Image 1 (cartoon, one colour):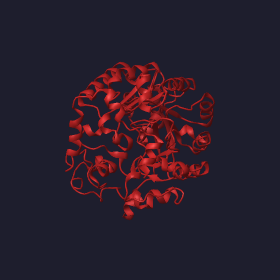
Image 2 (cartoon, rainbow over the protein chains, first blue to last red; image 1 turned 90 degrees about the horizontal axis):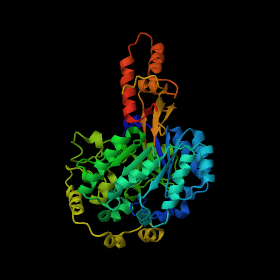
Image 3 (spheres, each protein chain N blue to C red; image 1 turned 120 degrees about the vertical axis):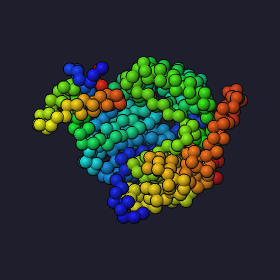
Image 4 (cartoon, each protein chain N blue to C red; image 1 turned 30 degrees about the horizontal axis):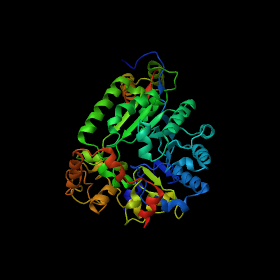
Length: 379
Length: 90
């Protein structure tokens, strides 16, 4: 990296603290790393988290996601929230809701938590509980009530895919009944566990088009009363997503074991020795580490990105997707129609248009995110 | 529906405006994102307090910047912010 790039690079704005990969749910589309169980005996302590958050705050970070796994499994979450809030972060809890008692939400409120994002897997108890391999639907409904009762904005998160996307109308009706202020309906992106289950999760074009029409009907009727975000899988576009708004540009992910990453998925990239917050401070990680500089700017880009006039717009897409699909993280994201590997995407999309196997045939083939499976992926 | 209306404006529940010294800017925060605001956008949004209406905000800005014709720019920005769902008046 040249000095000029270094001095022009601002600090991180957004820190995502994955405080644990432990989770009571076993969602089939989880984006946590396959070998997540390897972090269980290495989780950062409360003091380490507080130090890391302070270091990032000093560099200008202001948005804080407290995420996982299920962050409620850490019994020091109250303390982390209190410290982060005192530092001046805008604090967001990303949760399945499991473990959110009235006592805890009252403490979060008192300690300054700004926002709670609650995930649902579906509008029906049956599919919600199947997809998460738990009996959690009724608990989530209770938590949604607590969120309202404690005067938080209602922020709902439902990951969409082939198995639930046809319930979009019921999902939105559920959101409306809960008086949601903000609803994120993002289609599953195919990383980690979702990549393992990709062929069972990718919706057909017809399913997507229908879902989008229904979303638009709700948007027209409800306007800004319920802000509605609908995200299609990037496999259906011909230009890649501007992943993380550029590598090492605004986003800093800290994994439970202290690994500092430019995104949720980067742990999979074998050639970058990602720094650990136990060994380095956030300033040197962000500005000086090889890993955070590897794909900054555009001097690393090969063709067709190098000569592309859209390289400043999409940064060549996602490094992890390029690595997973082509074996080289520096390649153009194959989602781009200019990529020589684009057929890897279009072939998969073509498969998703085929006739649908019955649910009872698909379900036994799905791989659940659980500790037993994760330990197998560790080997 | 014009934004110029006697009813007060407020930030939508899931948004929060913060002055950030390190960024030397106002930052608008929301679930899953943030926007670093330009100087004039910050000057307008910081006056949205749940009590002031659009005409109040225009008057306050005109008092702060005498001789500058900024009314239409402020209206345009408030309409943009309203369309984006950042601000509301219900």
